[in-house]
Amino acid sequence: MPRAKITALGCFTPERVLTNSDLEKLVDTTDQWILERTGIRERHIADPGVATSDLAVEAAKAALAVNGVAPGDLDAILLCTVTPDMFFPSTACLVQNRLGASRAWGFDLIAACSGFVYGLVSGASLVASGMHKRVLVIGADTMSRIIDYTDRGTCVLFGDGAGAMLIEPAAEGEDAGFIDFLGEIDGSGGDFLKMPAGGSRLPASRETVDQRLHYVHQEGQQVFKYAVRKMGDLCQQILERNGLTGNDIAVMVPHQANRRIITATAERIGLPPEKVLINIERFGNTTAGTIPLATRDAIGQGLLRKGDIVLFAAVGAGYTAGASLWRWGY
Ligand code: UT7
Image 1: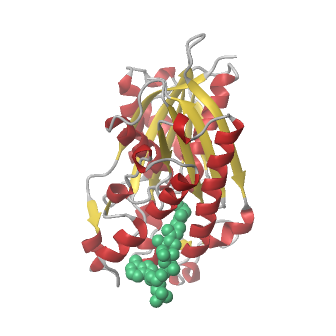
Image 2 (image 1 turned 180 degrees about the vertical axis):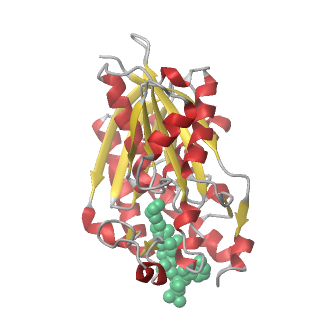
Image 3 (image 1 turned 60 degrees about the vertical axis):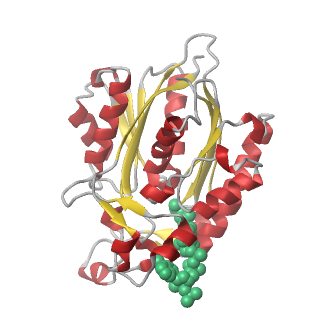
């Protein structure tokens, strides 16, 4: 059985930046509150008319360009998002067509902030089974489209962005690629973070629009407590069952929802701050985009090099949660 390896990474964020001081003009908040409670200074926001597939296509092109892989060589496209261009067709189909990935199949994967970690293990499984040679996993979200910019509890948190990783088989005998994955969903937490309307339960109507039910609704403290506990639990368990400790990890690349969730997790597994990638300051929470965006920075800062072990971890709406270990392959 081949081992699945990440061979390329590409990212894209829209140019326009929304700063904390911009938000001070929209809602009753302060730069100091946002920075202290979340770690965020600014986030990127897509221009009107730009959709998730537009960000995804740019990230995909950047990833394919790394090793000059032709879109026609892709076997599958897994598009992780909670902000698809529309319900259907899937954003994976829209991206496939725009890229000219003529041989690929694919689908959208809805797992909110855990989306990219779930996408990676799904892509890795397709490659490790021997079924596929090139799977492109894309995490892309245009959160600004479902954010209520009159709700100070949520509008300060999110930004727009995308990233893509290419998964291919490692060479025979090469010690690089997927090591392990641990996932968990808990639907009992579903009410704490959701977009209530627009689906089959509450289809769009004048009332759902008037009641602002097509936006993200969150009970922040509930999600915060779950995220701190679950991210720590999963990271600890996945390290233990692989006989590893924080010393063996070159860098943890966690989902970026709140600086305090990340530092609590790092402390729990005994990782010093210099081994933890935090870039929430510049991007906010881009949902499925955070892990590739943070991985790019980990590489850029010299924290992640060929042969290193990286720990990805995420918790999000659903609840969904996952942790994954990889030996970095390039
Ligand atoms: O990625 C998906 C998963 N999502 C998460 O992981 C998010 C998890 N939750 C969080 O990160 C935090 O709960 C928040 C950042 C959303 C909120 O921080 P908190 O420390 O839990 O604050 P809180 O909700 O308990 O609110 C404390 C106070 C409240 O005022 P009172 O009731 O004490 O007077 C809020 O109304 O802060 C107020 N507040 C704000 N004040 C200024 C809430 N949002 C703001 C704001 N600016 N933007």
